[in-house]
Image 1 (tube, one colour):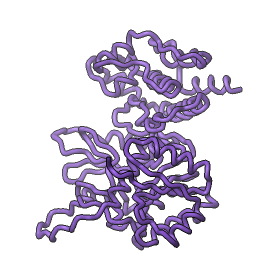
Image 2: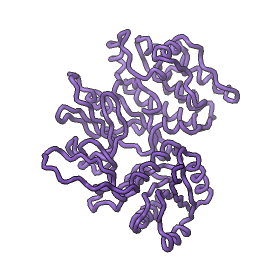
Image 3: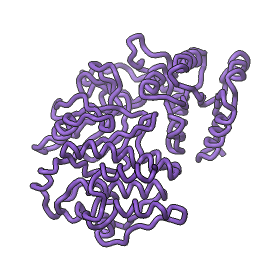
Image 4: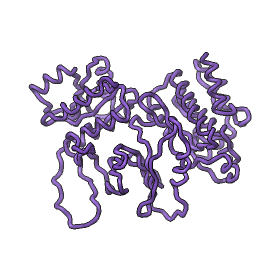
Length: 435
């Protein structure tokens, strides 16, 4: 049996510390979790040190009046000799807190209220990789090709004076870090058949961004130009900010706001209360109302395209297949389907004309998933799922949630005329129910 990896949890709140200890104990793999408060941690550093500890998890508060102390604690910890890789579990943090923690040398930053087993396991895996001994560096190459970094990162250290991450802080990445001028690639956030999304640092903005880079294809039509044009005309806190667009050496790229708190899909790995589901529903509807008022349909609303801020604000992203209402009316063709089958409205599944009520149907599917933890329509193939959207019975909520059935029916009616007529109408109904 493999020897258990020792993980030290440090928390000023014993209840939070025990909760986190339990979460790690339930992960797959073998962990031996120890728990210290900060006073006990200081005594440990002064006596036994961190010998044998494979990962350090510190629970830190990044509220406005506490953030400076949290950053000072990170710098103090990572300044100690032979320190284990640091994972920050953040309370009351935001994007700036995440960037500050990572650039100071933390291997990961996890918002406490969005923690999932997958995120926690991934952070511990990165810590283990950072703790592993480095292989000897290869001899310098005489090639003039861009640098490709594939060796594991060294022990984390303080950020470089410029505020950019020091080279050894960067995770393994199998592409040139200078793939796109003015951006330093730091990590891979996601991939598809047509593009890769990187966490990158923008030199011009002096901030971290999500940089979507297309693969080189023979397509004559740009993939991201329409998204840049569409979102550039939308100004609302619930809509992603896009900072830059361009083409470099045959690759399109688009730089947008980065969300360290992750997306709604990750949040749904943990149960959502009825109150939380209703709050999310209203916030998503508010963002959709802003989009629809400007004559745009999202057409691909699903949990991975709904990002979360630490304060609970939701932000819509990925307008790659969005269209204006006029464009949808002109371009609809049977057999041309874009979007996710699990969240597609009956009219979208049939390739007929769409309006704002199609996005509301997708929101209804998400609402059902938030309440029950499951998708209402499943199938062995995409076609089977689409057929259920068109012909299947309306999904029924389980016992205890029956009072929300009329609300759900008003979102998921097969006939668009029987749904809420707009996102504003949905918001008004929610406000009446809450009154």
